[in-house]
View 1 (cartoon, rainbow, N blue to C red):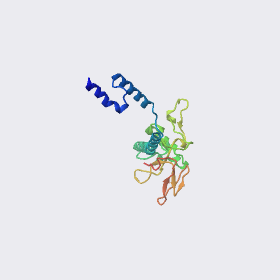
View 2 (view 1 turned 90 degrees about the horizontal axis):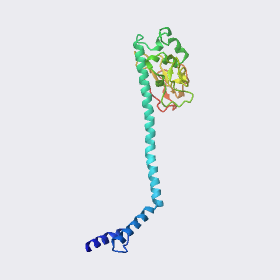
View 3 (view 1 turned 180 degrees about the horizontal axis):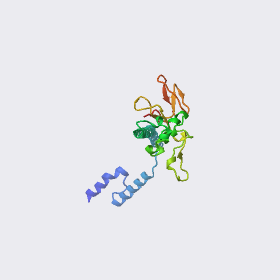
View 4 (view 1 turned 90 degrees about the vertical axis):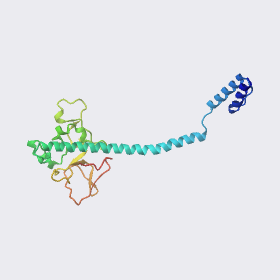
Length: 228
């Protein structure tokens, strides 16, 4: 019995002074101490430390998330251009190794339409190969006047209400190099539309660019500079 009393006395001072050596007295004192500890709020210093930690974590994480978002847009845009390039290859395989821009309209191409500077008609000629017009729109295109199309006109015999048809240059984010051929791989076939030449942004239409001119991109899309 003496040893049991000594054990309770030995641990007692860690919590509170023990008014009694009886087990009941010690247990009552321990409960009081625990309740007092539970009711204690955070000090001002602890709150400030917690706020500083949250701010520090936000400063470290948010820039990383922003970079991941830009990288995701670039990957999406590059994937679109890759699929468009494949569509061009498939189309030329069925048309004597020529792209639509080099094939007459009567034979399914767009040769006579090139001079108009209209881009969407070049893509529409490959609607079967492209499968969907959604890949003709950059995931990060910030131009509010442009809108991603849902269907090509050839696939829209009875479109649902609200369906956007691919029917204008406002439904695509990319340009086409109308003189591109497999025989000259240095020429650009397709790329982001927000081009600049010698620092001047190009307007929609047909443009001639020479080898001594500097080509760049505006910041209209975060995934600028992608070409195929």
